[in-house]
Image 1 (cartoon, rainbow, N blue to C red):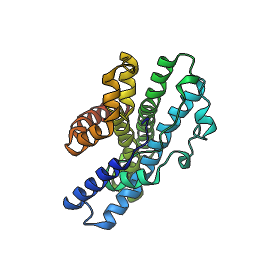
Image 2 (cartoon, one colour):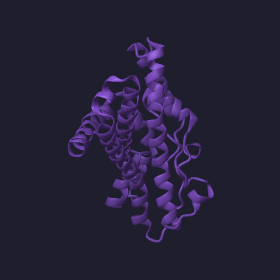
Image 3 (cartoon, rainbow, N blue to C red):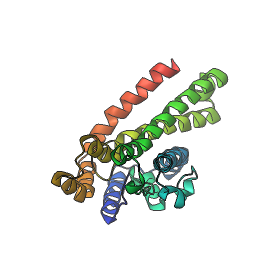
Image 4 (cartoon, helix red, strand yellow):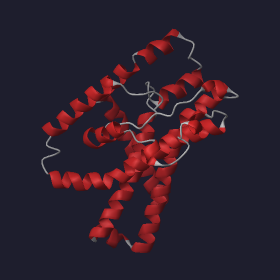
Length: 240
């Protein structure tokens, strides 16, 4: 994500939390807490590495801004937005601290901005692949029965699956071509539309467009089939 979130997104979070209460998702606090604790590592890893990738690539391409701001690190404290984290846990929609860059420092501005925009989603895909490989090693060494029957095994297995799933969600979500998501920057650089009125109009109202997509379930219609396809694809070609 390339731009800070404002109060409009907090409004969305409140709406989503309210809808979660209406659906009864918090009726069993203990189950919700246990599930949240297993989900937490996936969120921390996904967000931290996503933002680190933006910062690292920008730095390597000649922009010192992320380095000066302490963002070229995998330390979650440098990337996690507390409000965004709570929102993600409670509403299923959240954000990290966006990496700030200065495109004027790039040698080939259009190419380098494209690479920086793609870095986060590529990192999420890499993490998903790595942890599917970890899952395969766990099956080979610990046994499938231990991972699906034993309490410790099922906890570890669930956490691994969450890491794969959350990283795929972050990858697909951020590729949606709507500001402030990375997908809009990718499309803008590929088609070179940053100097058009269309670009600035969409950019100006991007937050509201994204809110509408979330509230009316459009993002869910995109995420569910894409994430399921990617998950099944990785599972089929790596595990089996």
